[in-house]
Amino acid sequence: MPSKAEQTFQILKERIMDGTYGPGYRLVIDQLVREHHISSVPWRESLRRLEAEGWVEIIPNVGAVVRTFDTNAWQLGLNILARLGGYATALSAPDLSRDDLIAARALNRRMGEALAGFDPAEFGRLNREFHQLLASRCGDERLLTMVVNEWARLELIRKSAFWYAPGRAQASLAEHEGIVDLIAAGAAPEDIEAAVRQHEINTVAAVTQHEAELAKAAGAGGHR
Image 1 (cartoon, one colour):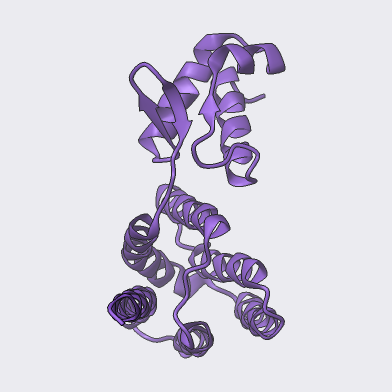
Image 2 (tube, helix red, strand yellow; image 1 turned 180 degrees about the vertical axis):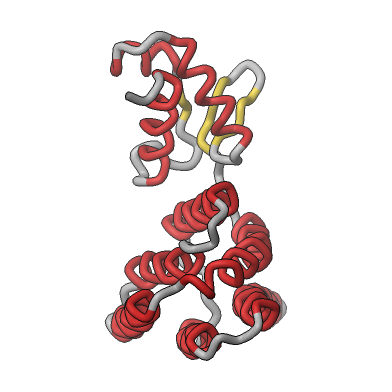
């Protein structure tokens, strides 16, 4: 049975991820103790752990507050995933089965359907599942946990806003197919890692350019 500290950590993390405790929500230990009948010590340990993982901020004279994420946090997260995800996928590739690759292609097709149906939330969920599947055989539990946590954090950010440059989502699907093709062909690990890394970097670059164009347009409109 999980320890009290692990139980409280999972309770808090799940509620942050499902939106029960949204950005800016204040986590009051006394209230958590009353609600779950678990003493304050495990809650304090869990909040420190969540702070270390970047889920909450502990503010003097205020307490623990669920972090508010912005575009910069999203871009930073993708840059981190470009490295972690690329490495994990390269390690995983030799042990991905034919069924794994069939499942990955099916997820990518479903992403296309979600895109056609204007369902960005489903697109984001399937995108995370696709990448986590390709990294799942890396053989390094700590690395995989880091990848999964970073994707979960990005999913939380997407609930506030869906940042995607026009045309980027469609290009992303083609890049996914290319990554799976490399794995299926038994490409060198460094080539697979580079392809996954470039895939994430392309998204950051596209969104950054799109935001710059929006800002320029808004500035031009304000000077008319």
